[in-house]
Image (cartoon, protein in one colour):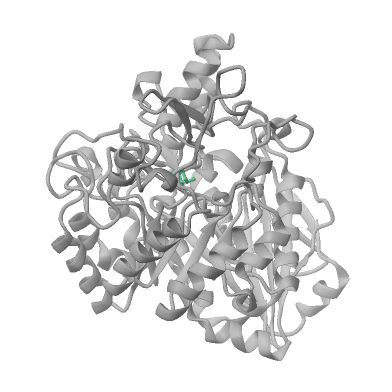
Length: 569
Ligand code: GLC
């Protein structure tokens, strides 16, 4: 127990907060309508003011941009759309000057089909690069090698005329899966990461990294477990831990990097292995189970109100399970692949401000490293979509077409896309109430949410009651309150229909977080053990309503009220 605790204090990133930058939509300095690296550099003082320690910068490498940069054509370059390598070096220097760290997004499950490796690979079966990718003959009777589906819709296999074989693409048809069975590919991946580590990068966010090891029999999926799309044969696959340990030996360990793995459809048991320091794999993991609680039977492209009990249950079981197994969670509500949590789990209308703060307090009280996705810190909601032509994302436009082909009316399909699309998170950052919200002097690549005159950084930065100030306070607490880092999690609400309540305890302090997730008032009874604690030194660390409930057996909570107290030992 003592060694684990001292590790928690020693590993600096356990007390850090990461800010995620989607550069395309962050800040444009050229008038192109697309954000750029210099735009980010200009906003570093803002990020520092918020309390950011680590910036996660999403892919800025050369790319045809079919999946907004997650289709990399050259891993050692900067896409001219985003600027130059000098701009990147300047960003690094400016970050270091502010004692901030950079985490780069590394996409090595697949590359763009425009990458030189793939261009060579497709030329002939005996090309030296052939084995960099996953090529298979057509099925005996012709057609695709198996029934695996792309995550963006349709078959995961693309036929290539030149050699009469299919190549695997788990995402867009221009994102060819790399063949990690090939030792040379693994060396290449380590080399390209060393290139960036040599430039002074402090860490990596590893894109869909738990998909790199495929079952080499490539069996058809009979649909008996999971979704039937083939994922059971490549998710947390047979050699994945071996490959990640190898990356640790080759790169993460020697450069002492902070790493987070994006784990698609994973399990708690695997995430413990991925993130327990003794395993020498990653620093921490993202999992998405808590963001599927509004998917009926796991189906992303169908709507239902979210299941509050499931949300609490999942967050709780990961808190307890990761702690017991010595793993470490990356905590998040939002990212560039998710609709805004504010619109999904709370009220983005009349109670928007209280809701945004409530979600923040709930998440920032948990154990793990919190991530803030751009715009979250000012309470940006999903935009108001008017027409399908406003969407830019390849997944959204594919799924719209497929849903209509499958018999949904255009109106039904639009309603689903408007709620589920990744573009909800990708509208431009709202800096001020001037033209284009201060994001660009040109025409933004994707529409702005028209509520920017009321929701923007300029209005919130100096306002002590703003969502921004609330985040700033929560982020600062992570530095001063050890219990946020090492406290054991205990759930306090027993299936309360409106309230999520939990405590965190170390050998000194107890922290209590109580949040009302509904638009109705709520009464919550504290367990006796915790109600009694209030007689000692009780201090309110964070709240979002002027009416602070009186500590006692029963707490009365206004709609979306959320409070964090500490009882110092
Ligand atoms: C990850 C990224 C997502 C991308 C996909 C394929 O899930 O976050 O944006 O489309 O991987 O690279």
